[in-house]
Length: 481
Image 1: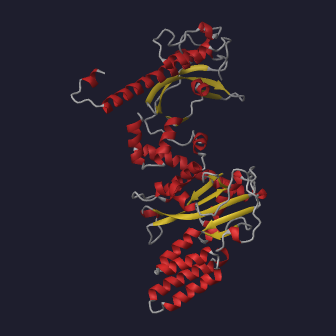
Image 2 (image 1 turned 90 degrees about the horizontal axis):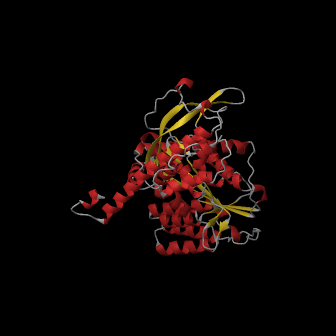
Image 3 (image 1 turned 120 degrees about the vertical axis):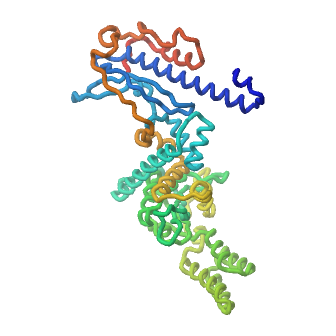
């Protein structure tokens, strides 16, 4: 406080940062004290016939309010077969969700940051907004480890799909599906020959729209896989959620590319995406009035007249070779996709009644999904990716879109991060080196007879909350395992 007040020019930001820094330091101290108190209590409370005190190991946890150094007792125990194991009762009792040396909250903050900012800017932003002092390499490591796990999980899912072992439980009458590719810039070694990048595939499946326009039941898949493999992944992701046998109508919207159209379910009704048709018309027809006329014929489903009009237009501008070539390019595109020009509503299909709260509309949401979920992070801003790094980021972004990201992080919490700090060297103590009060020194093991750390200390809100936990427990010699 005195340091702040002694400044010649004091701003509110100075006060804000000083208070925040002070409370983060206090939070680190509080955490250390609480962890030590609980560990000491567990040492007194444990079943000594099962858990033998073998000394303490120093470690640290990176939390969102700073790095917390602490010590915890390591215990020797035996499994049912008599094999020795060493465990930390503190970790087991508190269910300490940690990834490497990081708390779950810290990892979630890193993953959330790297899906919005570059790895370097993520490290800077976390350093500015929290007391996590991480390098951009640590942010990169966290993201890659997590992405590798998701990639392996999806590869295993495809194998399960090939063996017909996936069964989704949700039944819906109609499933809408859309797919498209996004051109991503790649780093030198990952580029296809003669190109600066490569298309990453994206698909979205959903049940329909809510009244406020949100997609319901969205399942997104993303990856650099080849077309056939990606279609299997897409179908496997869908089958995880939905009972595909119960679906009465499936509609797939796309640009006509082979990898989009050749889906796993042959009964799927494919339709050409309206946005891509409009885009193609604009790119190939120079005359604005003709553009409007062609679009109108397309919207009115006048397929034959549409093709005839484009052919006539191309013939009439034969003297302008470049324009004729573009018009014929449009004609070929529409002729190749002729049977899929009509939207699904105009094909005489029997469309099941929409469930309550779900609306059926014209398809064409993939461009928006690409932009909001993938493009904002992976394109522009001079982004450049390796194949593996881009694949990992794409799969993480897909889990965010599917709203499973935090569950997935928790699932892979033990394998995402490698500790980037020097390991603590320690030795297991012999029985002679163990504290004197350990073992037979306390015959009752009754918590009521032990000293509770912080009991006589100055009270803060967190200390009171901690003590209340144990004050409310019956002193019956409960064994923590």
